[in-house]
Each structure stands twice: as C-alpha cells, then as structure tokens.
Amino acid sequence: MIVMVLVGILRHHITMLITGTPKTPQPKAIRESKALLRALRLRTFGNVIPQQAFEDRKNYLANAFDKGEYLKNPTPSKETGAPPNPMTDPDMMEGMMDGLKKQLTNMVPQMIIMGWINFFFQGFVVTKLPFPLTPRFKSMLQSGVDTRDMDVSWVSSLSWYFLNLFGLGSVFSLILGDNNAAGVDMTAMSAMPGMMPGMGQPGQPQDFNKLFLAEKENIMITPHQWELEDIEQRLLEKYGKRPYSQQRRKSYAEAVKTTPPKKGNKRR
Image (cartoon, rainbow, N blue to C red; front, side, top):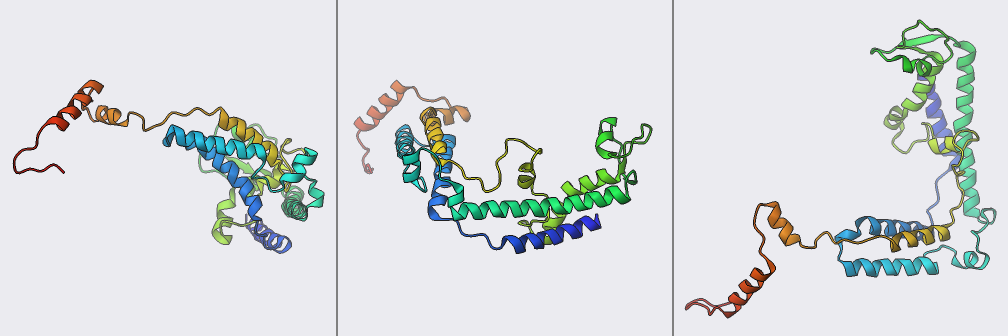
C-alpha cells in the first residue's frame, strides 16, 4: 500500500508536468454545450412554467437547433454535411495528445507494479479481512492462489493490489486535493483496447450538429402539464378544506361587488 501511495503521488506530479495548465475553452465551444444543457433543463423542469412560456422556449430552441445558430463552426458542417477533421484543429490535436499522455501515465506504472508483484509475491497471502464473506468472493479476493479449503476472508497479493488500486482515491484526495491525477483514470482505462468497447477515445470531437437535431426532436415530443394549474383547489384539499365550486365562487364575487359599504367604513 505504501508503494502504491508513493507511485500515485509521483504519477500525479508527472501528469501535471507533461500536461501543463489546461487552456480556457472558447466562448463558442462553451455555448455549444450550454445550449444542450438548456434544452435538457427545459424538458426536465418545463412543467413549472406556464404553457405559453414553455411553447415559446420550445419553438425558439427548435428553430435555433435546426438553423445551427449555436454551432461553433456552422459553415463547414452545412457545406460538407460532416464534422470538421480533428487533425486540422490545433485544439483537438492538443486534446488528443493530452489524452494519450494521461493513458501512458496510467498504464506504465500499473504494468510495472503488477509485474513486480507477480515476480516477488506470486501466490502469497498478505492480509485477512476482519469479517466473514460468502464463497462467491473467493475468486475476487484470492487471485493467483488456487486453494479450495482456504477461508474466503484471506486476501492474496494480486487481489490486494487491485483493491488498493481502486480504493486509494480518498487517500489521494486527502493528500493532493480533489482534482488530482494520482488515482485511476476510468476514462483513460475505458479507452484502452479490449477494456470497454464502444467508448470514445479521449479528445475525440463530437458532432454537435447531430446532437442538436436529436435534441430538437426530443423537445418537440415533450409533453407539458403545468404544475400550478388548479393549485388553489389542490392546496385546500391538502389541508382538509372543502374547495368552493365554480358557481359558488362566482356568486360570492357578485355579492361582494353589490354589497354597499357600511357607514364609517370605506372600501379600499
């Protein structure tokens, strides 16, 4: 565990040196992502505004997404019908290189430590858990130790390595802060070949034109039910009060209008 903590701290400082200070994103790039977030919030929380306000916002966003008003580079995507080539964008290339650097700083220390453990401590049992476990945990906690009669609470060296690998995140956050590069980067691991197929590579550009068109369809089919409709009746029913009928409310309003004021009292 001490070796892994020291390696994690070293990996954090190496990552900070090779990646450098992240650049401030461009306003147009921020506008692209925030436009999608605005549409998502409208679909999620649109029932708290009246029907007309919801329809106005829905139509405005649908027309803007259809015309590509929020795109960072609307002209190339409309002419060619495809997203721009990331190899021609310096920002995209820099993002891809940063992703590759993070993958290397995650993979190389893990390969070295795993080889060191397999060479010196293969088949060793290093610790015992202070609580009993079911036999289903045997394959997870006793990797590299082929014994049928050993208690499940015993942990092999290789299994202890993986438990520390995924469980030291809180320790690194306490030592280095929340935004540290010492822990396992799940995004980088998911981009490794054979780990999780279907995940995108780090720095891979997104086709916001397709995302906007898909979000436009989602907005157009989103139903609306105003949550404040008949709120008076629902509030009276909630507190056990009998709500007035429509005819009784009208008669009461007419009676208030026709009743003359008493002497000494003035209507306000």
